[in-house]
Length: 87
Image (tube, rainbow, N blue to C red; front, side):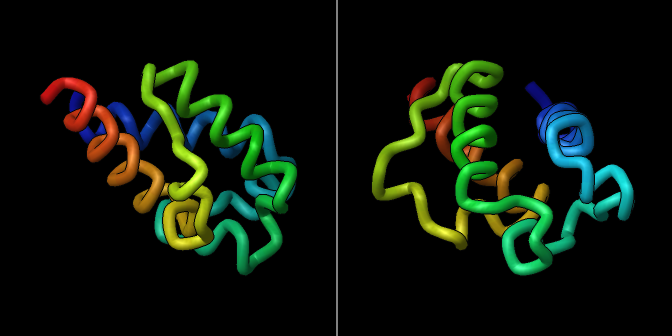
């Protein structure tokens, strides 16, 4: 799957799942955690979405704020995990 397709799917999920993201029309490089768009429970929703939609495994050690910073970061994370699964 192309990076822009991954990013579009993640963006669509974030806008659908988190009302503040939709209200603010969050940008792909906007901090999701720092700006209160996604909280700690929301991270679990994101993890579930990523695992189910992209068939990747999010490990316990992956659950750090740096991996959930913004939509662009989530896209890179999915690409890294996808290539690890493929390779």
